[in-house]
Image (cartoon, rainbow, N blue to C red; front, top):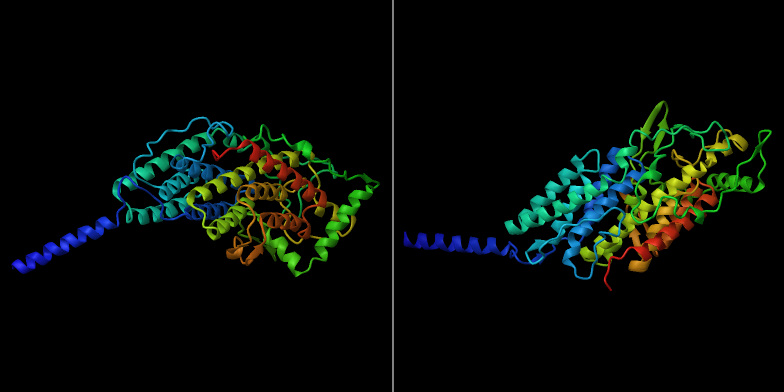
Length: 448
């Protein structure tokens, strides 16, 4: 009896020791998963695909969620600066006692998902992801550290959501009807869907850093005018651009065609099979770029602070890029290649990828890709990496020497796909580079 009692006592002590060893001391700072924000971005990507929102709306979701994650862990790194009073309208940030114990990746997860689930339409994809992760952290952490980390992350997320609600997004919902001009010189709904133009009021969204949506519009040269006289296009330079799109798209080899599809990044694309219209699931441009950065972060073994800073900066650059691009698109109301090619060259012609439902000039993908590459190259340098963002959508993987090579390929893909003129692509790059350089000068995230 005494022997059994002794063994029982021994097992009890060993069980207590092992259970304690799996718990983190309540006054330490720990990180289990430096890649947690990549997983969070994937959760939003799934919600974007399911919701079928436009690329600008998707960029808004990523931006605020990345801000929340960065701001939640920023106080734990003495070399990082808050974006409070730097981003437009973001004035107040609650204080925190950093002397207590926290799990930093749990803080980031909580802040990110608290923000994201209030911005998406189908929040189940975010909520279920969050619950799965919280259950994992519960098994690793002291209960006080777990509760404290979740509480701080959630509170920071709610602060960011309150700020987001003042960016006019809700005010422009329901006011987005756009009546195309009854004039063939301007943008018209395009085949095969002939959808009305999307997000014509996006220029009213509060930018992250820009003074206004039109701040850099002067960077864009005026596009060559489409001039009709007696039913013929009479601007020689415009006709050269038109023919270039037609030839480039028609003669695209297998690599160029795959490039167009690889960078399509249109969450609202469809294709027709007989009488059926089938929606194609695709990542958004912002989601694609965040996924690429995640690949680099894993390869370079970035810590959670570096990953959060990178995602904050590039999501802000892309968010502003979409606002500036959309302002210019509806300012110029420029015609799409498919409209003029079918009128003047080939009445049955269709581009290799679906033409998105908004004006052509400038190429928004060129704007946001160039802005992201400008920021990432300056902050993190140049690295070769393999991009797998499109792999789950059946497009395989691609290796790039650096961010700029990826950006240039994304821009060129619009010509191969037949949806943009060269002017829209090259001048979109100018606008994106200007926005990226502006952020590098204005946004301070490091003390040194």
